[in-house]
Amino acid sequence: MLVVFLHGWGVRTPDYGPLPDRLRAVPGLSIADVWLSQYITYSDSVTMDDLTEAFERARLESFPNQKFACITHSTGGPLAREWAARYTNSSELMTHLVMLAPPNHGSALAQLGKGRISRLASWFEQQEPGAQILNWLELGSRESWRLNLDGLDRSSAGFEFTLAGGAIDAKFYDHLNSYTGEKSSDGVVRTAAANLNYSYVELAQSGGGLVVKNKKRSSPNAFGVVPAVSHSGASMGIVSSPVTAEWVKKCLAVGNDSDYQHVSDELQQLTSQATQAGSMIVVRVTDAIGRPVNDYDLYLTGGPAYSPDALPKGFFIDRQRNQVTPNVLTYYLDHAAFEQSKELGLKIVARPDSGPVSFAPAEFRTDEATVASILRPHETVMLNLRLERTLSPALFLVRRAA
Image 1 (spheres, rainbow, N blue to C red):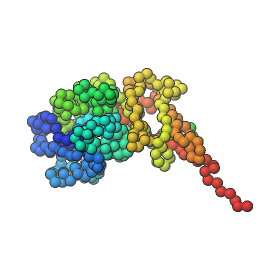
Image 2 (spheres, rainbow, N blue to C red):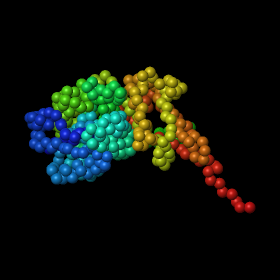
Image 3 (tube, helix red, strand yellow):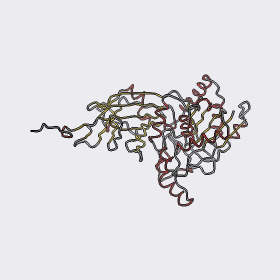
Image 4 (cartoon, one colour):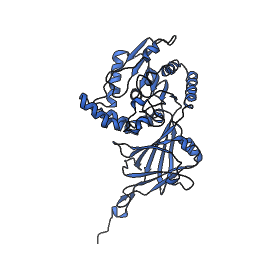
């Protein structure tokens, strides 16, 4: 078996820790060849498309026409998925994709990466922050939305696995930024943002209501929350952990659908032991023909009267608007707070709300069954809201000449 490692964003000198050697030492796993990648993310001119093309070129130069397993850390996961989506023969070549802490739905820290942290790196090391890669990594980015929407109908590889960290390393906690100590995350990536088990719901406005027009569910994907590991670091980092190595061995040993289901069930059992679980809702607001609606207020509602004041206590963890595509808003919720809820809804008030072209308020209400089926622990809901544009009669008038 040939194994390729892909690192994440911001890595200047790739260090995959002891994981490659641990895998080589496994009897019967037949890892004959290990390739350690190195690629540039600290450049504002580099896009994810550039990296996928460069990966393909490197593959053709180094191991053309050979099947391989891919082990990724952090941004390496979306990179491998983008490569698989771009090249039609990828499903025949990549037999296994094992992603460690991948920001498949983005990371709340991407906005910080373009700010304070990356500016410090630029000052002291004359490095650019890699703004276009960070744009991809923002929660609900246009690129991640497209990749995940396409991913509802296909997988990236023969056997896909996602392992997320379930602990925070205090050494990397930033007291000025609460994202580094967020619930149900590894200090960088939320478990819900890593997970490739997710849902897509499209709501279209009809008068004062929002009605379901489309609803999809991803194919089952092996996903596990590994306890006591964080995003990075020599002591707690997911790449350095011997526990992670054991799970990676199990993933690479999968050779058929029955094996895959067995490992998936084991990972599900592991995940059930996590003491915290977040749920993420990525809301994208457009008009009826898909043009972005950037100016709006969105309210989550609950209780029999579907009021913002009746939501369960402690439900809210975070809300972040995408800086590049401001029509996208991401809510992060404590799933445990909703386990006993029977009602969950939303109300949107978009602007302009008067004038020649305007939007009317709209509301959506769920029932208990809908809450349970959509808002799942450690998962993301991609919610596409399509609003009606109201055109004033005065917008265009035709008069018969006297």
